[in-house]
Amino acid sequence: SQTIHQWPATLVQPVGSPLSLECTVEGTSNPNLYWYRQAAGRGLQLLFYSVGIGQISSEVPQNLSASRPQDRQFILSSKKLLLSDSGFYLCAWTQTASGVYEQYFGPGTRLTVT
Amino acid sequence: KNQVEQSPQSLIILEGKNCTLQCNYTVSPFSNLRWYKQDTGRGPVSLTIMTFSENTKSNGRYTATLDADTKQSSLHITASQLSDSASYICVVSPRPWGTDKLIFGTGTRLQVFP
Image (cartoon, rainbow over all chains, first blue to last red):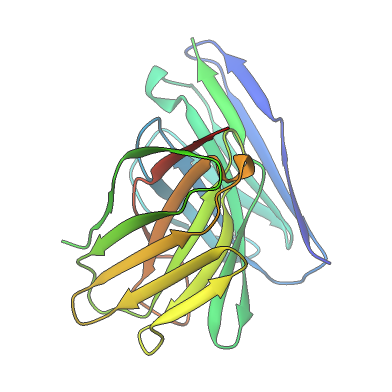
């Protein structure tokens, strides 16, 4: 069966520090991968998605970047964190089911920038 | 502008009672509508997915309905349990062949008390 992992689960970082969040998927190959951010009281915002190794699409201009060095690995990074980067970060992947793409989410990373 | 609006924002019910959550969307084109359950501090978990041709779909005590003409959906929870306490998110996909453009509602926070 497929599983998705994210780490760390929680992170507290000072403003201006770098960031690296990792997401890995097991049990599938060539998945579409996604990074979302969920701010308190707001809906999920798509940050990046990737359809293959080295292929990254950015949805919104921001202080973050993403990379996909391996088929089942997706990394979210920042060189210098801002207070506004605080939030709950979710990684997700998609699998086709009867022609409709089911989307599965990871457990999330709670990031607090102080 | 593509939007998904959910009501109420929050809801408190007693264990064993039924409840209905609402979702209105202004998304075009429309491919499918999903309901997710998100426990506090966790990633969302899919409850149902309905295409425009489906009017209702059940998953245990959860029953979702869809009226594609009025662009409304509802999620009915029967005989609520304490474990139903969570946020319920309505998500609309404009396209069937990918989920990179999912449109998320802000969710309804449900609290079930004994």
